[in-house]
Length: 316
Image 1 (spheres, helix red, strand yellow):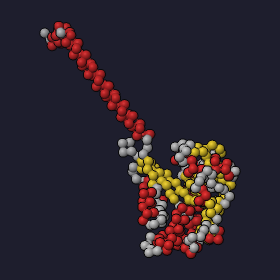
Image 2 (tube, rainbow, N blue to C red):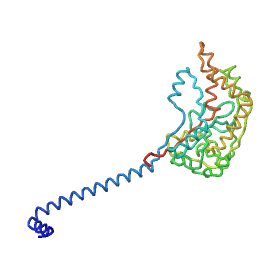
Image 3 (cartoon, one colour):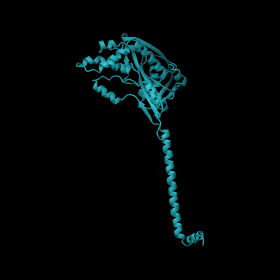
Image 4 (tube, rainbow, N blue to C red):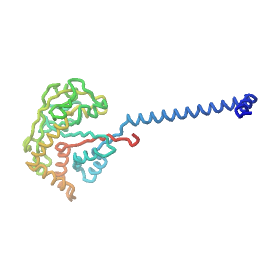
């Protein structure tokens, strides 16, 4: 008798046993199949999460180190010099960096405009006018716009051409525009000034932000092309009183101002003041003029840089 015939006879004589064995085998095979499909679905979901959740990092001020400086220097906040652009670009070429977005910031002056809905705004009103934060962006769909933190509600956004050609165009908040009775199409003069630092050292308790202390200045006329609204109550004050402009335009302001600062000795004096302020003084009052210069220069007369790096996940 052939093996196949013997197997058939064995099964027919013990139907219950083999039916049970078949069911066990079927259930086990189904369980294995379900586990494999679940594993594949889990891997697919994980990959989708990795693809859509791009890791980011920000290079900016180290606030813990800044607070330590404040403590060590008895009130001297010092100046945190920004990273060199060449270094940022070198970091962006590393194999695990997908791209980098660079944002510049600097304060510029205006006589006529006032802060909107900001209890701290009065601190920035000086004899030279009001210091406003000017934020340069690298592309129209910059980070805050891309994430939906702010949106354009009147006029339009900055264009690629305006970004590439570094044109003096700006976005401002609708609340700030309404409060100051300006709008889309308004031309706003913004000033960058070079201050006589020696006057602060002579009389550090006086108000050095006066026209009599201005060695030179540059005026830029910026056109408002759009009004924005903040969708985040936590950041509304941050966006209410700033001008959003092309990065290249703000870089032009910084470069032209730096030439004036070098011409009038501002840069050399500031370097001297910085090195002097870190020395130990027996009399704290003797140190006060230098700390006053550093504080004023850091907040009002120096460029700040913020960089967003998008990293490539190692599993991608």
